[in-house]
Image (cartoon, rainbow, N blue to C red):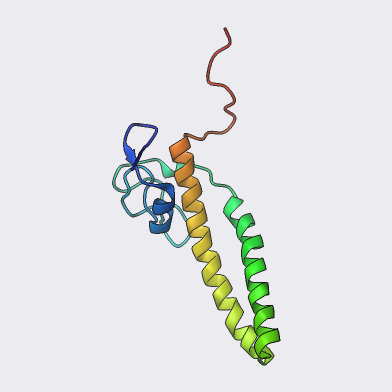
Amino acid sequence: MVSGPDGVGAVDPVRAALKGCCPRCGKAGLFRNVLEFTDRCPACELDIAGFNVGDGPAAFLIFLLGFLVVGLAMWLEFGVHPPWWVHALLWPPILVVLTVWGLRVGKAILLALEFRNEAAEGRLNDKPDA
């Protein structure tokens, strides 16, 4: 366990992301629904709405899953030569499941890293000029 910015113990960012846990207290309940964060942690009242993970996970997943699924589809096509409807039935559900799971994990890990590193917008120097 690492220490969070407010002195409270924080769970490992990867573990918090995989389990959908609060980065400060480690309790479940980070997500309101499949892909939307709650406003506050139900256990420790961490202001989750104050974090901004942006579109980083979505952009990363476009490239990663596109490369993976196209590669697997080509491997299947050239290795087994299935009818076209096998591709039509196989790849869309796989892509949807991997995208939703990847977005959940990606958003949660970015939120946990923002919490751990005390990230904020527009902060170059905290010291006043002397």
